[in-house]
Amino acid sequence: MDNNTPASGGFKGGLGSLFGGGTPEYSNTELAGVPLTGMSPLSPYLNVDPRYLVQDSDEFILPTGANKTRGRFELAFFTIGGCCITGAAFGTLNGLRMGLTETRDMPWSKPRNVQILNMVTRQGASWANTLGSVALLYSVFGVAIEKARGAEDDLNTVAAGTLTGMLYKSTAGLKGAARGGLVGLAMSGLYALYSNWDHLKGTSPSHY
Image 1: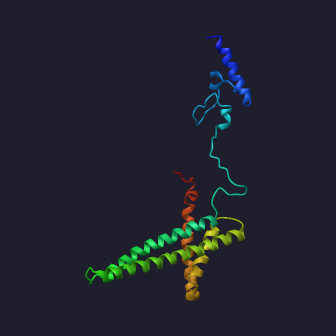
Image 2: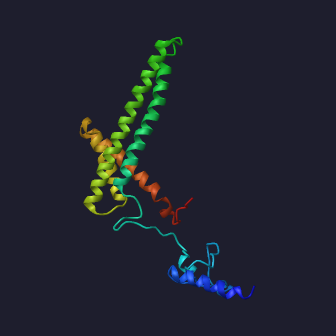
């Protein structure tokens, strides 16, 4: 049995040299000194130093010039779609409420069901169109201001919200545009305050 041991070692060495080098052998003493924080012990037959695989922090591979967070242009699609879906859901519930209220004196029949269905579809489409239009204006203003200033901060959010309110209510005259601008300023200001609430309190935001 002992005579076959060197041959076995030579056979392994021959295969190792054939495929680009022999496999390094680690003793228990050498492996005991290798730090393996945050990972399970690696096999000693891997031709990789485990110390190079230990990462104490999260690392991401990003394209050249890309930011770690999505910009306003990437978030615009989510914002518009989310507002359309939210408006459709709210309009559907509101239309159902209005339909049931207006037809409460009618018996349950096909005409009443048709009237309720018409009210639901009309209100759902109206609210989806309204919120989608507001989100589209807000996203366009936000992207334009970001490109013009070359920076992304809460000032862009407040300015985009104010301009959105003014333009959306511009058909009601100067007073209507002013009221719309104030509403947009208030809503965007509250959103900016909510986004920076942890920073204002001096605590780091929690991640789940």
